[in-house]
Image (cartoon, rainbow, N blue to C red; front, side):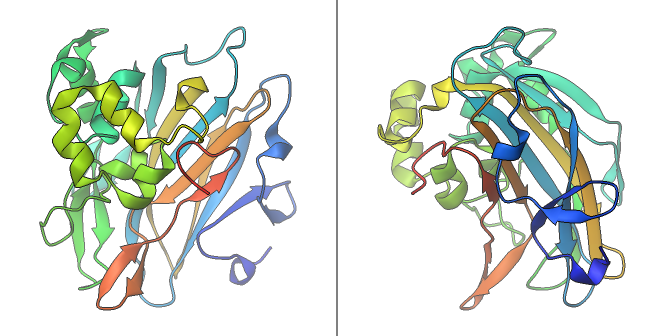
Length: 272
């Protein structure tokens, strides 16, 4: 398929001859684990731009033999980064689900959950090593700037509830709306209690999410396009696949708002 026929902000599978849009997670459901390469396409109408995507995968349902990572853990993977923001080697590690949610769902930068020992480091140290600086293009000014994937601020330095960090959450309400002021203020009242405010009882219980994996992949378009490959290893039914371009925006009035992430599979938190 020629690049002109590829659509922006779209997920594709390649069978060796044809790039086909992926519209459902059902095709990846199988009893045995199988590695599959998918492609996320970024296209620009004007100048080239830089940014990063986050890929989140999981399986919703009961525990299975040989789940990887183990229940209660989140696998973290990052491609090597070489940019104006500095160079970092690729990264592979895991962190407790509690630490992951405290950092991305509630925006914590400290606290007992994050600072308790987790392997050879604390959960906070692991998450800070996972996140990285990267080149990003500011939609408003078109300037290229250094950002961090766990940034909680806008390009201009002001606080952003629907921040880069919130986009790593597995809770779709947080990805779509950020962490509410009420939830942030109530955070000192107890992590689990606050989480129950964010995730409506009628939504899929994220406690049943197994084999959570998160990957960061920076990109740079060339001649208006970037085709970003990544691999998934689904097994079983009810696969959850989320792909989010941290730096794609659309103009809303006089501002530039985030574009909704690609979501395949069951809902995981308040999404209609």
